[in-house]
Length: 432
Image (tube, rainbow, N blue to C red; front, top):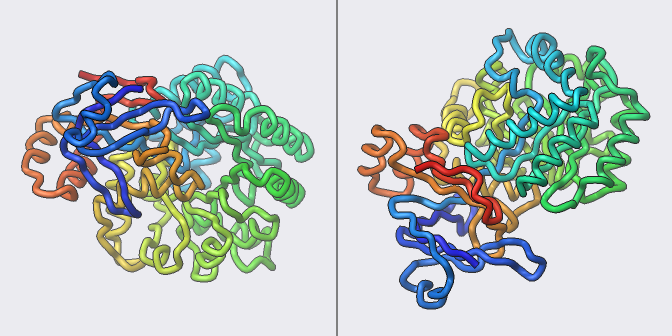
């Protein structure tokens, strides 16, 4: 076992955080050998009980749950920051050409290692990520994540139509490859597989039907895709499925809405769609930096909360503009505040932080596993330095409440705040 003494942030309920200002976090193996939180609380109360446990003192630091990214594209490392007129031109001019490079094993290995480095440097310890249509890209990312002990979910992108050579796959083979990858990787160590139709226009009816059949056969795998991100995309889906009630309902038609199904964006959806998501246990990956960058629209938080469906935050790199959870949380605050196209509201700092940790874990079906530091949770956490920059140090020193402290970190924070990332006691990033 090992222990850390610092301020410790954790959640006791949705969007309700506690900061133990002189806390002790004790980590050790459970019956299966997983490194999990064994105890958490005030140092004064716990120290006598764990006096023989090696303890690292971290004065002035905050231990917090590792961040959970609900939607990110590992092949789009080199697409981030590319100018475009909107989603569809951006895909055609940048994304597809870059993704075609992932048939090369050397490129896959280098990109996978860089991608995992970036996740950990930014304090992300769990990620649901797209690979490309090449099985080699999936194998490379899983192998890297396994070596680094990262909890990661990914899958081969299904896309057999309306996309160029180099990324377009063949229907039957794509489904054979998907099942082979599920059998090879799903449930191995901390890895999970996601059946991954890119989006409705890129998949034939036969491919979507096959994806739904695999989802029924392997009920504990994840499903990930995109829905209702952009109005041009929605019009395209309407042309392809004129009898469908909505874009989202096409996925329902093929059995792709259920618990552990995660759809990025969910911007241009209506009351019936939101009820469908709630009733099927389907979750939304809210991607604010991407939506602002591509001009796609604004996620309607008020409507989502009224309907009661699950959601959490996502970077959506490379449409998203940063790996940083702080940048994502700040962008979500901007999106919530927008009140011209929807009801505007101010998301509390604790709500924003919840969306990128325990709330995201809950939406992924991993509540009590990751995203929090309650006893029994896997021991993934970050050590935050609230004095990482002069301005941040000045601001956090004046914080009179937990909300003021968290909001200062959200607004002024970036990767420099992440002093250390710890995954199952493997320290992956460390700064003085």
